[in-house]
Image 1 (tube, rainbow, N blue to C red):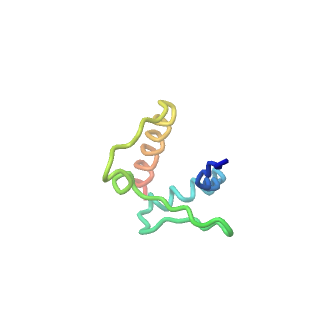
Image 2: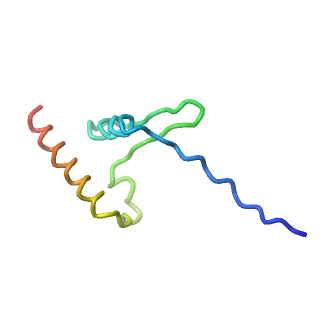
Image 3: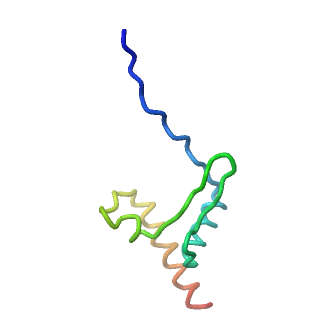
Length: 83
């Protein structure tokens, strides 16, 4: 009898909302390598959409998520003007 061996699945990296927002703020601030280190897990890095999708187009996202992203972008644009 042969056994089917599946490749190991990566463990999910879970970020709190606070840590996720911190990572996004570092990306928005233009840091070269915005990254969070998770001891014992590894690192979570952020990159711009242009970097991430340079070889392919982005997939579809839910309309609510798209609206949230647009709202955050609008807020950040206003914030940058007031700095």
